[in-house]
Amino acid sequence: MTAVISMLRAVNVGGHNKIRMEALRALYESLGLVDVQTYIQSGNVVFRTGERDLARLAGTIAEGIERAFGFRPVVILRTASCLRLVIAKNPFAARRGVDPSRLLVTFLASEPDAEAREKVLKIKAEPEELRIEGRELYTYFPNGMARPKLSMAVVEKALKTPGTGRNWNTVMKLLDMAEKLEAPLAARP
Image (cartoon, rainbow, N blue to C red; front, side, top):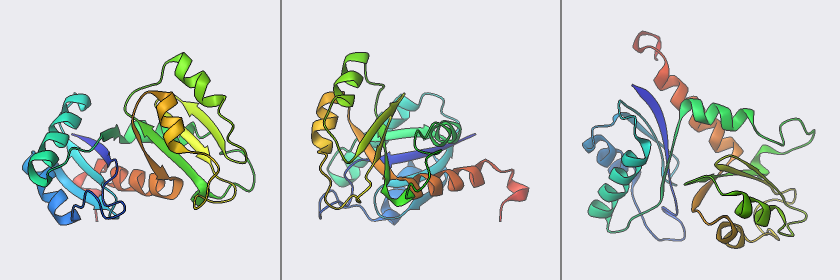
């Protein structure tokens, strides 16, 4: 079985699309997913599955949420090995003084085409910085994320694919949770 990280877009944000994490875990378990765990209240779920078609699984999860909670979120799935690559490809990793709490990774539903990538990278974003690596957009907010100059809505429109963002500390925690699920059962706490 593979450890998978599920990230839901726009769950429990601004009082909209509310889901209690206990109910979300129960829904994932009802879909046959194993060792289901949630992290914070923003729709992060880590689990194990034998399903190899993650696009189909994302659709199944979105349908289940729509039936149970009355809205259909974008569901982004990444395996633990994919998340390790996301971390390894961090274009800001070698730079001194980068505050991990100010680094956002937007996980995209699909890889943007060359035209969309070029359009995004031409967006005037200073002081924020944008980098695209495959299906991830890395954004560094040197002045913090509270009042950015950059409009993520403009970025997403240019990308032509939906995504959901997680700060670097959350990305690292999700990988840690997934790696613990990958460990042999005898080695788990």
